[in-house]
Image 1 (cartoon, rainbow, N blue to C red):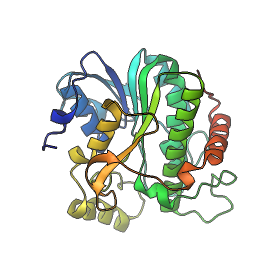
Image 2 (cartoon, rainbow, N blue to C red):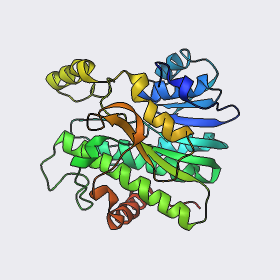
Image 3 (cartoon, rainbow, N blue to C red):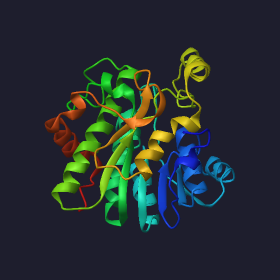
Image 4 (cartoon, one colour):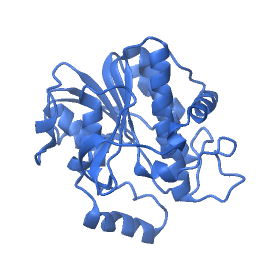
Length: 291
């Protein structure tokens, strides 16, 4: 690999991508590289001003769309604006938030990292031509998904545990989406990626000044640059890999390096839990598998 991610990405001329959370961090670098390689990229962002500022950093065909993945009404409204699209990159995320609920009454990590993306993918499936990319995290290995207590009413709320549970949900969604696509005889595929340890601003909303400071500045000492952290996502989005492939950095326990196929926890491989999560996600979102 070289120090410019777009040099390693195949040309994407004539292809359309939707990238959620594309105004900063991994999403910004993913969108920037895709646009550099000739793709038409839709930056799906919660803040239009920040989205437009991000678009100004890019060369190529770029547009900005309003999307708050934690709000299902926003997901539905955004989906209605999207016509044919080749690749959906479900990148937007939240980490270690204080306890809170989405406009739909769903715990914020689960709503942002999983449920909104679950809804968006299912809404866009009839208009997709290639794949859905799910951006996960090594933290899924610490996740324990309790489908009977997703709102943390019985358990003591812990921000990082809630985050890890939502990232476990990402991997279960990846596997179950691919299973359903295959069963339906679809040529679409679902792939996944994680950025390892990458210096981004995702820790900026913890509600704790100390944790925010350590997360924001400490990661700069050990984390990869955002352009390098975006490479696994770019690989999963553009390379000819099988469905249910999961890509991450190749060294230091998947924390650093170049894109390669990586493993996942036993919980993430549980087909019964994946199916149960899908059923609960349909119930919470009111959106079902569209193929």
